[in-house]
Image (cartoon, rainbow, N blue to C red):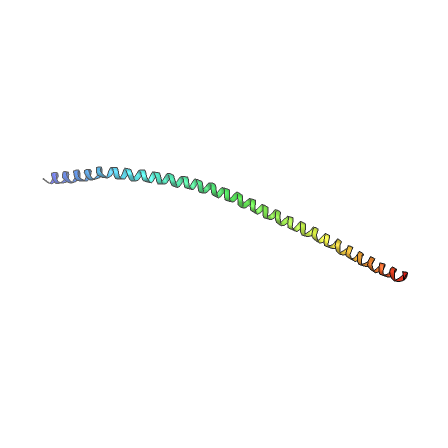
Length: 106
C-alpha cells in the first residue's frame, strides 16, 4: 500500500515534470533569442565606440592644428602690425619733412 502511494506520487511528479518541458524549452528559446540580440547590440555598441574614438582623435588633431594655425596667424599679424607701425613712423617723418620744406620754400 505504502509503495503504491509512493509510486502514485512519483508518477504525479513525472507527469508534472513532463508538462513543464515545453514551458522550459520555450523559455530557453526566448533566452537564446535575447542573448543573441544582446550580443548583436553589444557588437554594434563596440563598433560605435570604435567610431567615436576615431572621431574624438580626429577632433583632437583638428583642434591642435587649428590652435597651431591660430598661433602662426597671430605671429604673422604681429609682424604686419610692426611693419605698419614702422611705415606709419616713416610717413610721419616724411610729412614733417614736407612741412619743413614747404615752410622753407615760402
